Image (cartoon, rainbow over all chains, first blue to last red; front, side, top):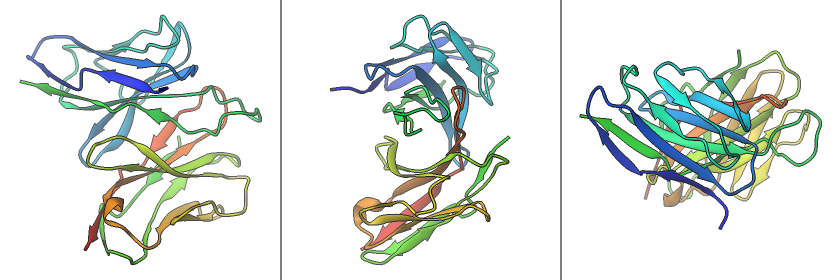
Length: 119
Length: 115
């Protein structure tokens, strides 16, 4: 089945350690996104990528890094510089949205999320 | 920058009744997309309904419908014949058209359904 796979589902980290969250999609989507969810904050955009080898910072990129070496993969690294990394992380993908173009309905498709806890 | 506001953090509805969830947004664009997503306790984000700003007709999906007021920048979700399975967080979201656009979410509303 086509979809987005995030792993691991639960992750525990000691302070000062970097961790990498995996996101893989087989929907042949060009665009991929990372969101962070905290209680009462909604979903906030960390990084997004519209094409391979290119990505842009979102609203809360500090302390995070990403890479986009393959179309189907968009891993997120939470570095030790991230002051408060405990959160729920959601990966999403969509076809590239072209103004006036056919095909995309604009929606994002989401993975099941990864819960990161810093001990 | 575009912003999305959901001012009610929680709502409750009796099973089989109707409930309306409010959302307002701020944009200077004339063409854009609006969405309502549902997040049940499993935390999987599920698209409920979408609306394209150039369409005047309000979108409907079975028991879910929207009231899209473009001039007022309002996009409310009506759930008819509420069911226990409708209990979840609901997020309103906005997206510009364009190749580099992103989805901006409101803070969400927690809907509980009373049996």
